[in-house]
Image 1: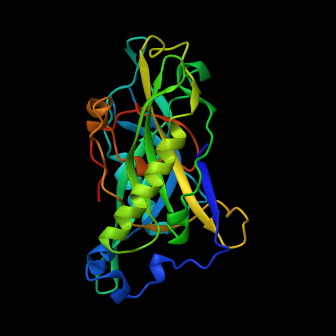
Image 2: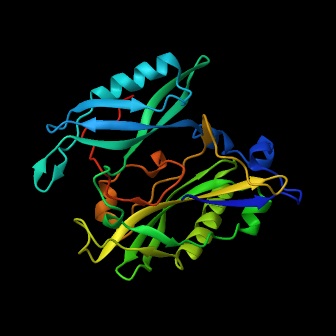
Image 3: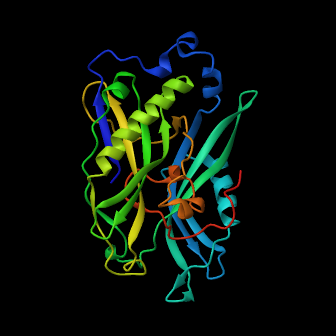
Length: 291
């Protein structure tokens, strides 16, 4: 599952989002332009043997509305995939689909929406023993300095799982913040959250694949989102639904042990709210998500 780290705001902490322009510094305006409103939409997609889209479904509970539903339906229908192979033969494959829609200001009170990233899970034909699974994932401690500043955000970790199930390497691929500050403050928050997540991840253990195509590999790469949240009363906040506003961090692909596969992997922020996700997806999209 996604690791949700909840910090209590019993102490008086100033949320960066609420600070004044003067307090944050002159480069806050540039940071504000990076703010995105996003919506995660789940569903399924059926890929024909030639890589075209045979059909798809969207979660009816997603707050899309008629206009956005038409946009997503029309875009997905035009996608092309690398044909899915099973035992060396192309097949019709139905896989879970996760999309992240991004809304940005287009001026004059208008906004533009695009499908910014995608993630396609494995088909139901895979056994549980075909992919790495979490065994013991002790959550990190909420960093005190980040808690004091109201440093909410999500750290997307890339974890290299060794054959004995331990963590051989780990690093943050991206850190998205839900508070706004100047460049120095946001860099500090991203580093603090990253350090806490990486430190905890080094002690994690996994169950490694014993069947399937990857069973003989020397190591496996998985993505693990770690969500740092804040509660005013000590209670765990509910799962976020609807549109979510955040400041996306730069994507880090400079990991010698994962570089080659990261270059062809999509952005991590289309991942749903829970799960341990193999870097290798269940389907490979050949056409870019359209605006």
